[in-house]
Length: 276
Image 1 (tube, rainbow, N blue to C red):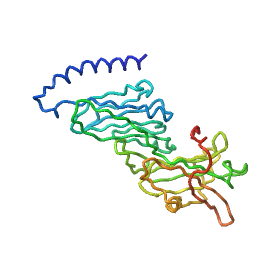
Image 2: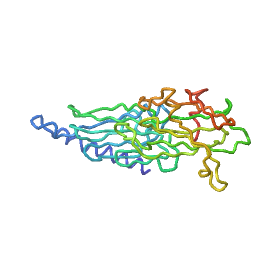
Image 3: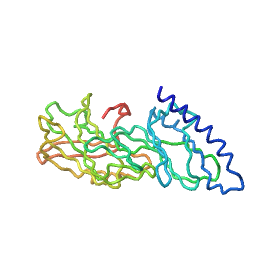
């Protein structure tokens, strides 16, 4: 009911704003009049996301709201902005992230969500401006294989920890923001192992292999530290890609220690329904 009331209130505000728009005389400087921006989120729905966040700003934040993409299907979300300079952003699947002004950041110690985002900076000469927001993939999903199998042997005692140098994203430019990222990786409900790395500036990555404490699987004795970034570098991974690629890490153990091999994703796309 609250959502319905809120949407009705926005509709009323839109009707009130309409005569104000007309009231901007052609003799006036049009830069003093707002532009009415419509953000279409239909592409996010087609990507499987039914809710998310929208944000607008110019020199300061104008609006930031959690919305149902389905509620604005085909009609779009509307906001009055400065026509000389404004920014808009749409976020979907931002689990384990929090909004901080013009940034979205991963909660410390949690794995990054599988974030999709769109950001745009614009100016407008007309009184209306339409943005057809296209979601772009802001994470790398890492699949771990053990001797080619997605599940580790039953007597496998170790866990993994992924460390990276960036844990945030500018929501308007989609540029990665520095901040320590640390996320543990272990078997999911199917016994398969997956990790998530948010967008990075470079291949400054480490993979720790640790023996978990009995009382807390997220901490324990680190037995091996592997330069994961060097493997990403060797395979030509590019963190500036518009949509980030997923990778497979093949894990092996020898008398000399741990061996890993990083390659492009192996297998089908059933991982789209995986909960990390």
